[in-house]
Image (cartoon, rainbow, N blue to C red; front, side):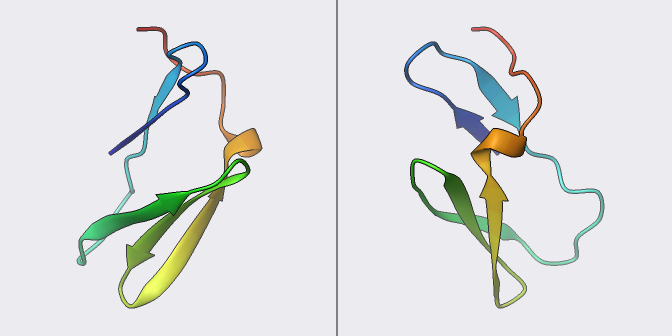
Length: 55
């Protein structure tokens, strides 16, 4: 899975450490990305991501 910032093409690959359940993207807002995992909703704050890779 990856998050791509459209304004400059920076990207982040999200790799969970260990998971027995699939992680499915739900949506994205200006501040968070949302994922479904093991019947829970995970919220990732976009501002907490490290500097992204370049295209």
